[in-house]
Length: 65
Image 1 (cartoon, rainbow, N blue to C red):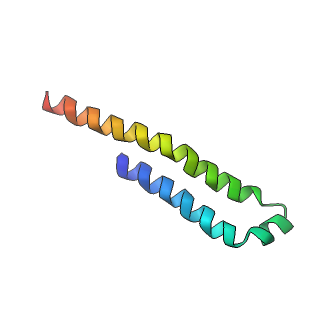
Image 2: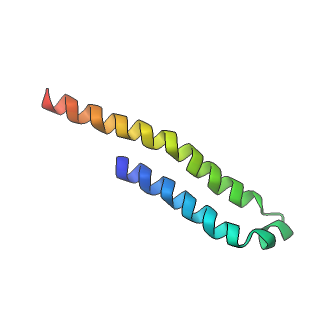
């Protein structure tokens, strides 16, 4: 699950970067919130990634025991 969480978080960051290139156009059409949405996706992805790292680590430990 960790690679999936990392991939999702990175994807949100890439989307935010691409959208920031068009920030003036987005603001002109009232869609500047799209950038905020992508940034929040990345922000929420960080604790999600931490949870997945801990989950995977605990799962490996349980399998050894």
